[in-house]
Amino acid sequence: MRQGHKARRRSERGIALLIAIFVLLLVSVVAIALLVSSGTETALGANYRSSSTVYYGALAGLEEARGRLLPKNPNYFGLTTPALVYGTTLPLGQAVYVVNQLPGETIVPWDPSDKYYDREYQNEFGVAASSNSPVNSVWNNSPGGIPGPVYKWVRINAATEQSLYIDVNQDGTFDNTTALFYDPANPDYSGNPWPSLIVGPRSTAVQALEITGLAALPNGSKKILQYLVAAAGPTTPSEGPPVVPSLTFPSALTMDGNSVTFSVPSAAAFQVDGTDQNDPLNALPNGCTPGASLVTAVGYTNTSDSSYSNIYSAIPAANYGKYSGLGGTTPNVSPVGGAGGLPAALQTVSGMNSLVQTITQNADVVINGPATQSNLPAAMSLTNPMTIVVNGDLTLNGWHATGFGILLVTGTFTYDPDASWDGIILVIGSGVMSSHQTGTGKFYGAMLVANTVGGAGNQLGPSSFDFTSASSSDGIYYSSCWVNYVQAPVKYKVLSFHEIPQ
Image 1 (cartoon, rainbow, N blue to C red):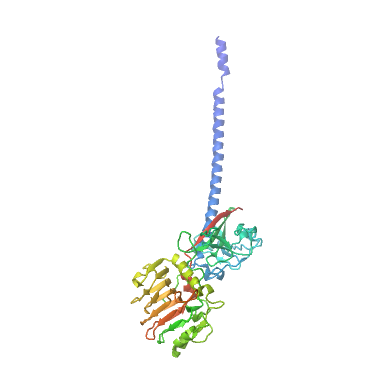
Image 2: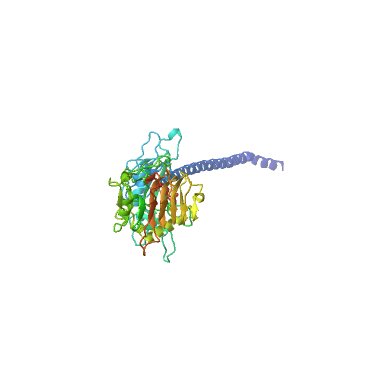
């Protein structure tokens, strides 16, 4: 009995060691698993961090480019890149690159040998990338030693069906020869508004642009993101285009219609100047520089009636030199209704009424007349030009301030010559611009007067510019910068956004 007991005790010797070894092995396995898991988590975290960094870096590039398309941006592309001037259609095949180089780095996205070569362009258009107008990012070379976003370049180009791989007009092909536009007024099959892309331009549409950005890190992490954008005006249910897409003026003062009536002050201080210039007292925030081109001083649209003689004969001979512009002759009074002049649609009642409706629908303020300067919005300023519509008469009297923006008056506009305006003045409706006082105010931009109620059928009636001989102001001065500035879009709306696989 005692021998058996000893044998059993002898056979159990070392079991504690085996258990300890097993537990140690188990703990080691768990520890190794934890180490592996921790390493995996660290790697995943690093990958996520890299992925997030390049994602938000590329997004920062897209947002910089989208913001700099706006004329009101102090770093507006149009100041240095004519292809991106607002109102200009960016041609197909022309890519504008925004490069963001680190100190000592050179980035040439259209060069196949470059580390950050833009292969995506060839995927979209079937041809190698090229650049007509490279532009530096605001972060290029880390200004002030402050590192910026990690994007390397952003490309801006016109969109086509092929580049987006969307058959917009459903004709069975992906067109690569016609630019796409965005039309918020596009009708559906029932005639209801259906904002959408269209192939080719239209009066209510604005060009759709691709903005593509590449971001990269030294560890090789890369991302390419892409926006499709279009200019948009004030926030409306459809977020439509800017107030007046690409409205241009062939003259500083345009008398639109038939047998216009015209009278001007005899004072030598009053002038109408078609030389492109800026208001010296109110510098535009975007630093716009006037172009070298001239427009007509006083333009009229009907060459078959008495408009020319009515205007010419009203100008005192002693003041001929005060009416200067395109062509060099003085007084500079010329027809502007033909090719390259005022669009034909704006020489009809229906076209003018459509223009009035478009501006009214997108206006910042609509005022029912009769109105005075007390009804004008206090928020209007140099940095906040506004679109103001007065349905009826507007009378300014004793107002010595400057207005900024687009002013549309459908009744009689009685002007206090001591007031000034920078932007566009449209007197469309009764078509009467009147002043019987004296002052030293000036207009910078362009003015158009049209009578839509006194003609026969779709023909405009006799518009009237009635500044009596005893009245005076310092006149009207053409300014393309102000014309474009007050029509600038409020934003570029993002129509689509996606990441392009690498």
